[in-house]
Length: 231
Image 1 (cartoon, rainbow, N blue to C red):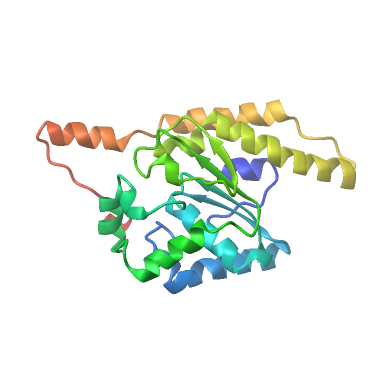
Image 2 (image 1 turned 135 degrees about the horizontal axis):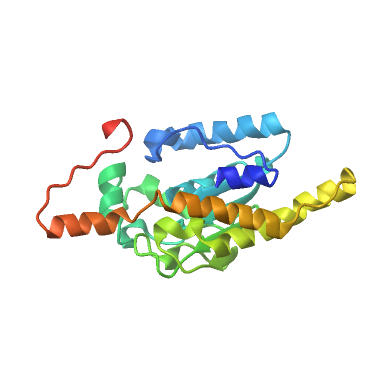
C-alpha cells in the first residue's frame, strides 16, 4: 500500500512501531503514535492523512480527534470502531494477545472516542463478508462508507478499493501538476494497471492462514505459531 501511494506522489510512511499490539506498541494513552504524527507533520509542513487497517484504524480515529489540526483526513480499512469489541468473532484472540478487558473503563472510553463523529474528513472501507471483526461495526452514518466484497485480511488488496483511492488521490495530484507546475497530468489507467500488476505479484506470496490452520488442527497435526521476534 505504501509503495502504491508513493508511486502516485504521496510521502507515505509506516508508523515505525512494529506489530500493532495496542498500548504496548503506541505507549500509554497513544503517546508514541501522537508523537509520530507530530514529527511527520513537522517534516512535511502540512497535515497528515492517516490510513489505518483493523485496530490501526481505531487508533487513527482517536488520533484525529486529539490533534485535528495535524490530521487532514482518516481512512479506515476493516476497522471495528463503531461497536463493542466483545461482539467481534475474533474477540477472544484480541483479548488474549492484547491483554485487554472490553469492560475496562479505559477501553470503553477509548472506543467511545473512536466512535464519535470525526472532526476531519473520514472514510471507512468495510466488507459484509468480514468474518473476523464483523463488517457492521466497521462503518457508521457519520463518515463516507465504501463497501467491498472481501474477507477481513484482503480488503486493502481489493481492486475496487484501489480504483476508488486512485480516482480521488489522482485528481488532487493532477490539479497540483497542471495548475501549479504546468506539467502534464498523470494517466489513471497507466497507474492503475501498474498497481494491479504489483498486486498480482504479491498475491503469489500471500495465503489464508486461517484455512490452513483449521485444516491442520482438524487433521490432528501439531501447529507452531511464530511471529515477530518469535512471539
